[in-house]
Length: 164
Image (cartoon, helix red, strand yellow):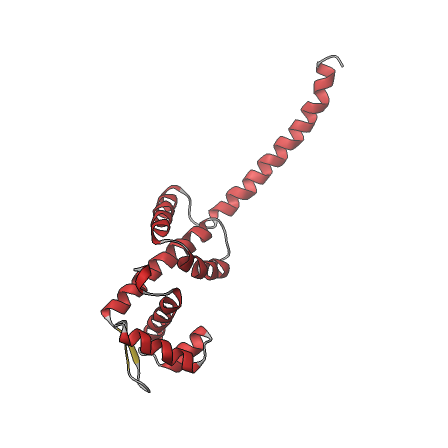
């Protein structure tokens, strides 16, 4: 599906979907605000997406997604969610994880994304819930600190034990 829609077009489709979910309808000025884009740019993109069958758009009217547009949004959302879930698993703060997922979802090859999603699904089953890793990390630091202290004690004893 990546070959048929640019990353920017995916962003417009997703923004349209999210606005419709929130307000019940979407207009170009809503999308302009959501994406921080100029109104003429939004109109141009909506016209292109309409011509390609992803949205129903009439100038000065509302915008709705076609089944084809909804499918693209569903695919993009799954990619985004997989990256965001992984980033949260490794204790990246949620706001940063969301922004980084926005970038990653457009950069990688679809086969890489699929394998990444499978990996995240496996990790989700094997690892404790998000936030627990920071507890494990703190515990690991404590263990390493204790091990270093013991290591220093043993290193002092080693020369004496060797008769040096």
